[in-house]
Length: 175
Image (cartoon, rainbow, N blue to C red; front, side):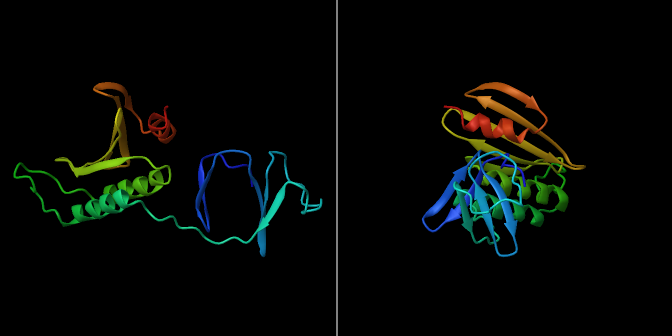
């Protein structure tokens, strides 16, 4: 398996460890080895090379943050909406749109993005809004897997277009 391409949370007894680079994995039926360099692994060499660690592996299903849990609950409540829910002919978000937004929320919560708000729109769309002191983002999910993203720095819109997860993550990790 190649080195980790994106930040990953590794659950430990004392919490979560975030990693971004430098780990290669070899896993077998009894455990896994983590190599702390970026060279390819030759399975014919000694698996106990210095700089490696043997670990037991288990499936990790991350727990959502409390804000993400509340947002997820609200997202699924949109299933209860009826046609014309706003009194102006609003459409109900389709199951696929709700699930796409929920999957996105789940995925991005791993990066500790500041989820702020979610709402349905009058055309059956759903918006997820992320916000911290200086930056905000709105991610819209619509039918037919269409989505778009708006990024703001204060009141100034700095991006409008296709959803780019890395761009969104970087937007909130600027120092």
